[in-house]
Amino acid sequence: MDWSLVLISQGIEATIDRETERGWGLIVTEQDYERATGILEQYRLENRHWPWRQKLPANGGLFDWASLGWMLTISVFFWIQTHAPSSFRDCGLMDAVAVSHGEWWRLFTAVFLHADLGHYAMNVSIGFFLLGLAMGNFGTGLGLLASYLAGVGGNLATWMIYSEHRSLGASGMVMGCVGLLASQSIFLRRGTPNKWKYIISGIAGGVMLFALLGLSPDSDVLAHLGGFLSGLILGILLQLARKLSRSTAANLFAGIAFCALVILPWWLALNRLAGK
Image (cartoon, rainbow, N blue to C red; front, side, top):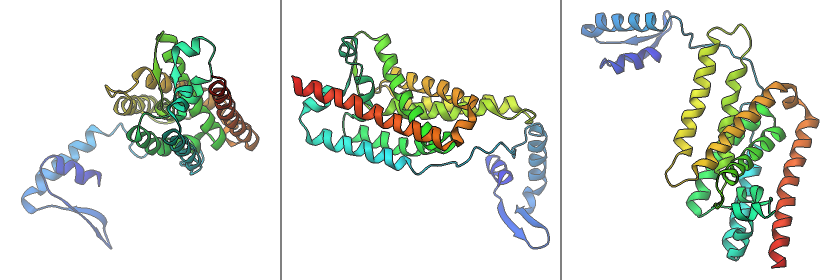
C-alpha cells in the first residue's frame, strides 16, 4: 500500500495484487516497470533510517466508550439551556468580571454551555472521539477529570489575561484532550529507535490538530490555547504517575471528583440565580 501511494504520487498507476506463491505485490504496465522500480528504490533509500513500523509500549485500551456518558451530560445541559430562560445561561457562562468578584464556579459551569446548535454539535462530536481516546489511554476517571480540568484551565487563562471577557463552551476541554494525547509521545521507552523523531512528530501532530480545530477566527482562541497547554501539562504529570491509570481506586476517586466538580459549581450558580 505504501509503494502504491508512492507510485501514484509520481503518476504511475499500480494495482495491489496477491499471489498464492509470491504473496503481495504491485502490478504496473510493462512500459512503467523500469521507472517504477527506480522510484521505489529511491523511496527505500530516502526512508532507510525511519522505521515506519515500530512497536510502541502498550497503554491499555485505545478508546473508552464511557465518553458517551460525557456526551449525554453535555446534551442534557444543552437541552435545558434551550428550554430554560436566558438567565440559566447567564448564571453559568464564563464572565471575567463576575469571576473577579468571587463567582469562581463560572470557570467550571461554562464548559457545559453552548452558544447555539452548531457550537454544541461540533464540540460534542469531536469531543466524544478525543475524550474517548484520552480516557482509554489515561484511565476512565483520570482521563475524564484531566480533560475537564484542562477545559477549566482554558477558562482560567482567559480570566487571567482579559479583565472583561464572556465565553462558554466545551471547546477548551476538547483542546485539553488534544494536549493530553500529544503528551504521550514524550514518554516512549528508552532504547526505542529514532525516539526523538517520534517525540517531535507526536507533539507536532498535536500542535497541528490544535491549529486545525482551535484557531478558527470566530472561536475563543485563548481558551483553546489554555486548554491545550493545560492538557499537555496534566498529561505529562499523569505519564509520570503511569500506574495510576491502571488503578481502579484512583479512577474511581477521579470520577467522584469530576461529579463533585460538576454538581457543586452548578449548585452555587443556581443558588446565585435563585437569590436574584
